[in-house]
Image 1 (cartoon, rainbow, N blue to C red):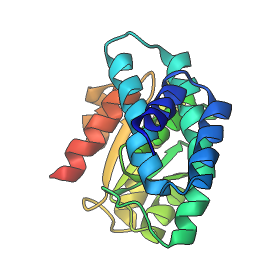
Image 2: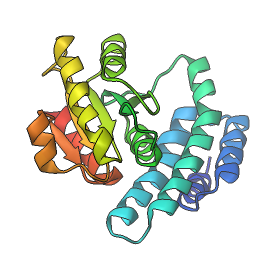
Image 3: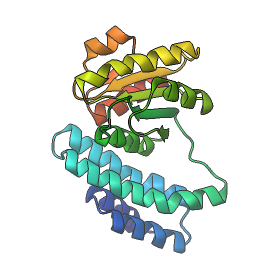
Length: 215
């Protein structure tokens, strides 16, 4: 398979073109490409590029969302084939994500999940309006290394504390790290509730997770 194919895959993610991304994935599989090669050499470099451009303010949130959709479309085609080969991607860690109880905002959280997957983490996204007990139960079930909880409202932010309390009650802290994020969240708040860190934006959150789990 030529470098041109990998470049096209990368470009489909940069362009935020899900149909093109899925089409290229299917074509590569039909020509005998290993799904893992398509992921690691084609699509992930695209997501890395987008993350870098976002950090430099050359790309913006809508661009990131479109790229995340393209990445998701490609993975939707490649993951089932990967499962058939019995091979798993080697993961850097297992992360449970969700938006806290009472809050239904998910753009930021979904973006963090997609970027974490692109960077080699296994991600379980619990969705929105998730109670502390649900975070703790899932973390125990999948043997998570880290829990990320998002809140977009000052009124629901307090439920990030509830997540940490639930993990404490289950005896999962401090082994399971906790990262908080969302528009009203600050570093001071993260320290106050005993979180291990705070992600200012999606790219920052991924870097934080990487540094916490490499220690």
